[in-house]
Image (tube, rainbow, N blue to C red; front, side, top):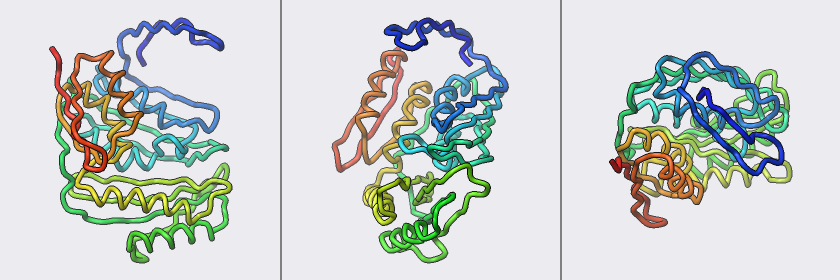
Length: 284
């Protein structure tokens, strides 16, 4: 994408030299060949393609629903619609789920760039329109999903119509994802937990419910993971602001690294438990 010259990208290397060239839009296929996160690959190549000189079409294969990475459903419902506020048009379609460790997932993304990203403000979320629960299950006993959904319904006061189980067609391997979706006037936020060996279904649901209640108990529109993922696009736009209810150490590190590369000031105000206001402004 960046037509870069790279030295040192090899095993046991202690030095990496990266000389980026001109960003090139077009059709790209990224096949990881394992259950590694294909969504993180998308978030790596997306920023330059947002301001490229033409449209791009991406095909990504690998993990689509991984712990410690944004799952596809989060990109589709939360991240992409928020970035589209900046004058670009991104659309994404899932063709196959890819869970760890089997992989085998696939999705496609179309990107219509902008000459310049538009700053925006996201300081409140407005009225809550709906709260839904969803369990995605692949090659695992149905009682796992039923137990997760039962706890989520109880903890978030959901009706039968507000919670459902989705079975993956033709799965490559086992997988389990529990999602709470909070739709408000300004955006939709997702809170997600993955089932794992040795962790009770009830504990998985408790995690999702806890994060959802924490979000609903604040007045901030942006969740902790979306906050981290918005930093680079907002910095590229050189302006705007958003309010989040939590700021992770990963976000703080991200902010400091971004300031090494871009002429932008990222101001952080607030305190833990009361929310954080993140403001962007060009330094030159």
